[in-house]
Image 1 (tube, rainbow, N blue to C red):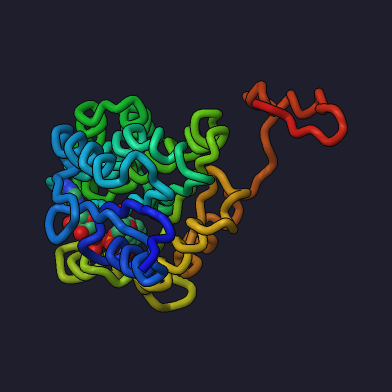
Image 2 (image 1 turned 90 degrees about the vertical axis):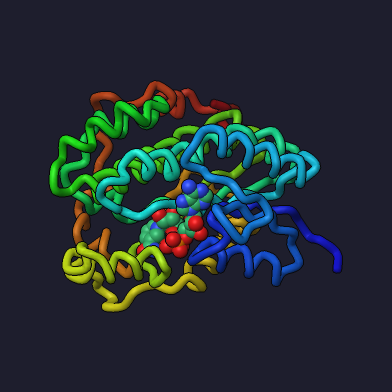
Length: 289
Ligand code: NAI
């Protein structure tokens, strides 16, 4: 069979990562799966040595060209594992993507899809300092800030990690190094999807909190539904998409935050580059940032 493209999928052994890997393989693509077990590249993304080894092995297997990357490896909101949650969910994305950027830039219009979460917009008590520290690569400092939220450290660690990784994608995904190099970086933000991760929450001490989560469509999502969205975000349909967050959550975010977004842009603090749109480029040209 001819191989159409080469994609790396982290978290390929379970849940949504497994569904994405299966869908890509069914379309004739080569998939390099990365996970703790049952994967082409077996690596522990909670340590910097594991992340480095995974990044290098994927580059070796891809011959230096990647048509796309799907970052689905992640840890759920388990109390007591705050440090691991932020290491896997943030550094397990950002460090790998930094290492793979040249290989992605070598492909024609490569696509990156990162798994965020709707917990980014519906979780209270997330310390801004934790998010700031994570964006600076300071997992230890972030964990200290998270542990001060006694009683809710698991959900707060999870939401902090997903906010940080989403902001990283929006910032870098619109920069000359990524968008300007032909790479499209976008985020998918699922609500509760029936995977082993959600199953373990429903079977654990947080079951009540998870079950009381309001979902307007009154059902959980499936891995196959989310994999279909990811496939679209890997297709040419996403050529004109950068730094976007695609929320697929049965309506929870819209229900809880219906007036938070979109909202008018405040005049104070408007980024300087926005004003450049008033210095209109010549006819037929697109402003360059
Ligand atoms: P899952 O638990 O079925 O799969 C996650 C995979 O990540 C597993 O195969 C696991 O081995 C791997 N992984 C975890 N820690 C790792 C490590 N240290 N090194 C290497 N691999 C590691 O989870 P699911 O539900 O498919 O989640 C996929 C992504 O979607 C995750 O990033 C998750 O945070 C996110 N998400 C999940 C939601 C849900 O309701 N299931 C909701 C919103 C976001």
